[in-house]
Amino acid sequence: MRRLYCAEQNAIARLGSFLDHWDARAGRQLDVADHDHAPRSRYGNINVGAQPRSAPSLLVPRCHEDFYRYVEPGVREWVSWFVSRGYTTYTSCAGHYYGGAKEPDFRHVGLLIRQASERQRLMAAYERVVLPADCGCELAYLDHDVSSEGRRHDTIDVFLVPRGDTREDRYFGAVDAAMDLLLAQLERV
Image (cartoon, rainbow, N blue to C red; front, top):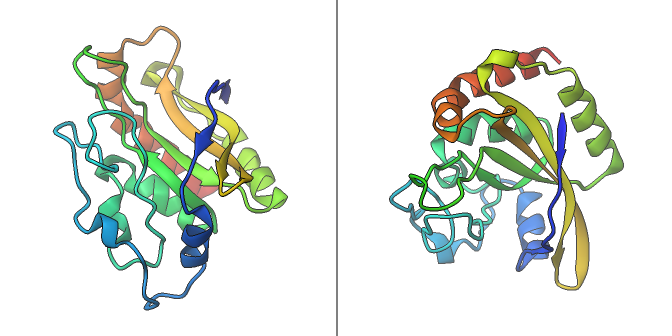
């Protein structure tokens, strides 16, 4: 799996509250009033302000009755795989091509690493996944941290990115099939 690097420090507002809600049982009153309607950009981005670009994610805890409505359709099954195995997702993106007007966003899921064993399980599972060389996509990860309320939190964002010199149009034409291959392999690990 290819490692990616990030020069910018990411920040998340009210992460402590989000984590409290993430761990809560269903039915507890949740504070997502700021994001009642899963706003979408014209490219399908679901984020704060429905921006047609990478923008702050809507932090919606897993026990919110409409949790998956706030997750873009192309990445819902991947998010579900992580959540069903005890991971805490804090961001995700189905991937968006903006017609060459700006850099595309590639498919990914961001995970808050809350225990060292989560990192070990994640890396072990993904080391066993092999996507075919001709599928146009490969797995990558960004190992970094985010800051919130004066603390740093360990995170890993897992990506499906273009393989080698794969053009963006081919990547976006192939990413759904690559996602299906990835999920099928993950079910076996």
